[in-house]
Image (tube, rainbow, N blue to C red):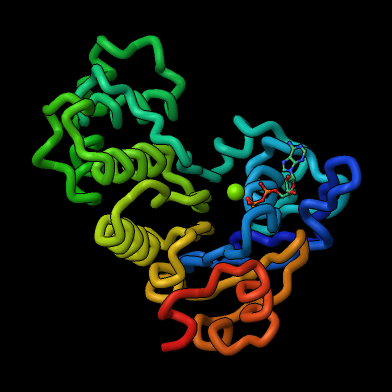
Length: 256
Ligand code: ADP
Ligand code: MG
């Protein structure tokens, strides 16, 4: 069967810096794949090449077997590639439910109908999505009253509103406390399974990565140096070297 996402010999240079250097990997439906590597390894550039924010110098990205490279971000989003943002992108003045309704209307290109019947029609679907992420009880509260961890969870519901097949999450847990991080990744994993979603994410906490990812790929200076299940990555000599070399030891996860 065709993989959901195929990244095939992708390359991107900025001046003399090869940020993504001949990188290839695949991601299946129902799989939670972590992309890790030290700062500057090329993780965000990789995301931006996949979602169309940046054109690659070489290589192809395929979604469900069809090339999406060179398409505009909006078009790639329409094909079912969603993303969450490092900085939460919600509307504080709206209620939690309205934030999701906005996203549902955007999917249907009815952005300007917000106060019409269309908005009310989307409410049930918004409430379903909020239930799926555990925010149903907060639906009618202003988004501004949510704690940071809940804002990030709301973002996940907003991303799901477009019914993505593939979700890209660049540092989804940045700024969150350890317990919130684990909760957001458990929820993500649950959604991956229940909706048969493919998720590619980056994350600094190795504990979270090793506890939740189905598979891990490791970038260092733009190159993919390892790929495999957490157990294999934990024992990989090159991975250890990269992290020891950067002076940032992989906490307990690697020595466990
Ligand atoms: P990561 O997300 O793994 O920290 P990035 O993809 O942000 O890494 O960056 C990879 C390399 O590419 C770094 O050396 C960074 O300085 C460089 N880089 C990223 N984006 C740009 C840009 N728009 N212009 C110039 N250099 C960039
Ligand atoms: Mg980054």
